[in-house]
Amino acid sequence: MKRGDKEVTIFGEKYPVIARVAIMDSFSAHGDYREMLHFLSCQNPAQVKAMFLVHGEYDKQLVWKEHLQEAGFQNIEIPEMGQKVSL
Image (cartoon, rainbow, N blue to C red):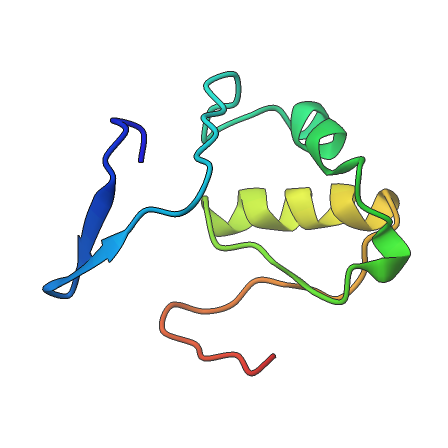
């Protein structure tokens, strides 16, 4: 993890960390939509099967959804709290 831990405890079970952890300090949780679109630019929108917007206020999610659609992304959902989705 960020501290360099070699082991993590999840629900009381210990697991070795076997992942490379990368930190993206340049993006904030409230990043500009242009920065976020740039971050997603490595994705082919036609190959992205679904996107779920789960962060932020609903009115901001709607605006972000519009920007994503303009960039070619489709099947963008804004799930309700507690909603379950089968993939």
